[in-house]
Image (cartoon, rainbow over all chains, first blue to last red):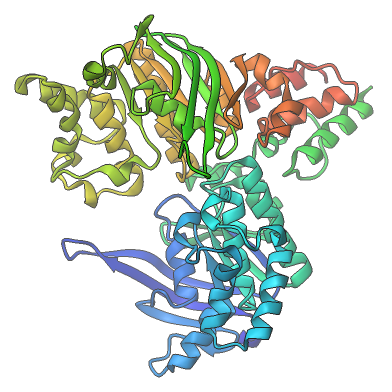
Length: 290
Length: 281
């Protein structure tokens, strides 16, 4: 397929970092990938597999050693990228990180959300509109005048997300954005991510260790040892538990249960990645056997 | 081994200011010796304040903390003795590594306790073995280790003090599944082989159901429930209503029993679910 059809396209990308003793450590080897506009992608991999490095290459926090990266058709690995072009890439691709406390800069929620668009030099009545809209999208309108440090972890992350939305990005990268949250906080953030993709058409890349989050994506990419190890729909990826285990990963509990029952010779039709589907498969199979 | 009792314990942050927040209110609780106790609760429910009370890092505003029926605040000058009996591993403990070598970092605790030089090396080696940290890494700078190794080195630093109670606040947060498994297994391993009690704070209901004997549930600074994990996870509706969850496999079992299929309610692992459901076919 032509690169124009991809929002993000990487060609043979290699990246490394230098250790304290001067040794170079390869993090990504020969990554060739295409991500389409509006796609919802989960990226899995054990600690040190290169997930975060990959994300940081996409909005130019890091630069690759070799290979090419195209964002919306623009080669961002060119030597002659102008400052304006770099700025534009960072606006198009927003990132939300792991620790909510490190991402909030202002003392009032709405001022924090306005920080991004202010930096973009957007007129103030337009900023007002964007801030209100962004807070509404993440369900935090009632907290506009609150102090960020008094919010729960999930609320802080939603404010951080609103700050990115206000810059009208085309793609959002979540780098383990739920790792520090409790179950409710995690659900709030995941529901927000789903909404951004389904209703706003924002391209989503969710880097996570939680298999239950990965199943919500349309596509799962597994990185291992700096390479693309697996790439497919959640159903395709999680139907290969042995292969995942070799990369230090596991399948969701309910997927593992269905696979184990099948191994014992019980006929269960279809793949399953959620508890609802899992229960339904078992109930249907029992109904059939009675 | 040590049994910890909390009697009517309360704690208030920013007392006397307009921002006064009650972190814990009238907590009565016994943490039994020699078992694994899990503490769960939503963000801000008081979990971290509670665990910091267990080793005297935070002093209750009112109420008593008793270890083997002795009030730990009876003689405040002696509180440092409590801190070596009850070892506390805080969240993201790898940020607290500071020595020049991993060996020196792990040795810091026992050294401070006044352990003789000749015995320290053995404690360090044993602690490294407990957490599965390769002995070759001991002479490296802690800052050259990977994230998972740093976490293990930091936990080894507490284990080297040979605490009778090992308390860990989110020990597996941010680790991948195999890193999680390794950390959890080594913590449980320390408890099993030394008889020490283990107290774990976690947001992962799967881990809690798998590794804990008893569960304590906090909500808004109050004790919502405590008891055997089987009893606690039976009350799934209450757990969900305070922002918690039950293990994924347990919710599958609940859905099955709601649709009239007879299955046991105390199922938390894929293996147990498999044998329970396989019987039905």
